[in-house]
Image (cartoon, rainbow, N blue to C red; front, side):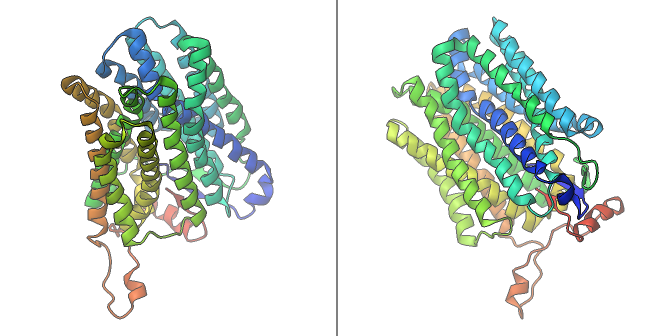
Length: 443
């Protein structure tokens, strides 16, 4: 979840001209490369496990560390992004991630992979990911939502493309050559960053404090943190172990790798549908229940029934991809109704940390369960239960209707929900007042 608060100039669009769309394309490819490589961790899990002959628990730390460090870097190195700007951050992130992947050619032990593929590459990805989206924000005023929707499409496009690319690279260049090739691809982040010139006049992005104590006074915000933790925990298990689980039932390596692409196709389609509906689109109560809880129950309970057949495996991936794409929209709407975007902005650091923590713990926890039970089935029950519980937590708060005033005379007014936290600290009032003049906090 990325939150930006900005104070702008109405003449900004005319000053930046058409170059703003070049920045959108560059940011699209930043997300394309970072998420494409990061969410292909299930393929690398199989490769590193076979090469270094470690169990699932030890090998799972590679992908978990990569996701954890990527998410955590956006918090820890925030001061660097503020000091040197988005352009330098993205370019430096490209260099660091390329070095991390390139050093993977020389590793001789799995614990060295933790450092190169996990820590160093994760730092580079974390430095480049968030600033690339913030750079788009400073160029747009009226078409900001459409621009950010295009950028977010790079996530799904990367998940669709990179598993297939990595599979062919492994066949023709082996694992060391694959890491070297991905290192070269990551250098293109520097090219993307070079396009993101700071705006000389007009819109200047003012970053909100990520770790304000104000949101912690709200019990709903705590619920959001826990929901993000469970969602990240369950999703990490699926991305790491799905190809391995499929191969247990005789699916070949190349076909198992394609399952990750199926998730990307489904999630990409779902996100684009909701993006087309617009940021003001609403989800009715029935849709919220069916998609959040209904799909959660299906994903949790149906996996062992489908996974023994390849057609069933694709069906499971489509269901999970739809569920994953929907969750983003549902969480944004529920957050806007229950807490308000300004408080999400001030507490974004806590949310990012919970996402990082779930990514770090998910893979190893499932690895221990697989070793203990000698089956993948229970690990996927754990993943499904975590995803389901994250949805249940948000629905519990959503249907408490906290923060809703009672207006029996006017049903249209009754349906309007207000943020639960009603008092804003004085130091943040200028930022929120700017929103009334057309500026917007993006969650």
